[in-house]
Image 1 (spheres, one colour):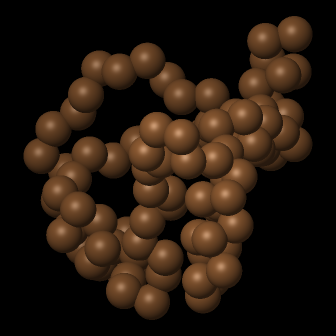
Image 2: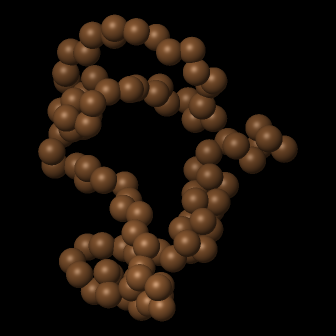
Length: 95
C-alpha cells in the first residue's frame, strides 16, 4: 500500500461501505506510515466553545490563523451532505 508491504492479519465482517474503497483498521502511527508525513494527518478537530461565546466568532478567530477552516455545527452538517451528494453514489443507490 503506497509502496509499503502490508500483511493482512484478519478480516472483519462489517457491512459494506457505500464507497468502493477498502476499510483498513490500524494504529495511527501505521496509518501515517502508509500515507506519508507530507499529507494532512487530521481531517477535522471537534471543539465546543464556552457558554455565551458566539460560534461564528470562534470560527472567525480560528480561520484568522494559518491554513485552518472552521465551521459551525450547521455549516459542517451541510458540508457533509453536499459532499455525499456530489462525490458518492449514495443518493442514486438509496433513491
